[in-house]
Length: 284
Image 1 (tube, helix red, strand yellow):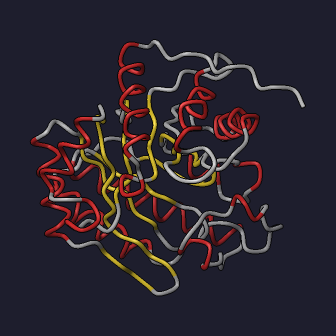
Image 2 (tube, rainbow, N blue to C red):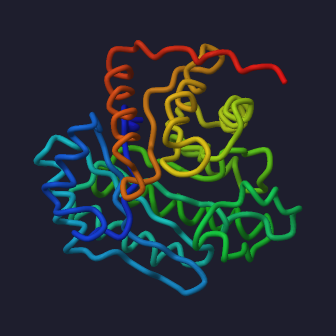
């Protein structure tokens, strides 16, 4: 399996203005106890195929490896563009000597004919502006094509098992979940703006769909960030869920000094397995 463990960050639009120099970026990751990072390789949406800068990605990946940070690549694929997406992932993984890949399948692989999920669980930013275009049969074929190409790339380059990231509340989204979990992928449910109760519901919904290994995506934005981040992370390890070995934070660029301090504390607790239970939620 070889899924990443410990603290990780998503990083997108790499540049000195958004993330600092490659060396400063890597040093900041190391300072907060991060053990891995997911650098964006390609984003696909209704505007088409949008690869990241190879030279920038290579520079940041190299600095991270020099600092002892494991490098993964993440991408945002679009239904029907799987071949071009994986072509870019392959080239970027080879250029950066990446450990593995993480595919964010939200939006495009939802069944467009199914009932729309609640507005608060549909993603943010550019993802919101896009809309699914296939029915269940077409999205299933798309995911199978994506994962077939993924397997070929992993086999050729000797990569770890790929991850899948998408909506945290699997019960609310008509995705081809069985296909996504069929190759033993590890899962990263996006549990950003959820309630305490929905943390358990989200983890359970992903496990019920076949994801044995979960590394949740958690926020450095919104209502569960800043002063609420510590309590939010505690909900993942309060004794009611299977063991969590780490978190993926969205995103490095949005993380404040206060959040970096909280994350550093959690990096140490994850290493020493001393994560605390949260305080009881007051009854209204």
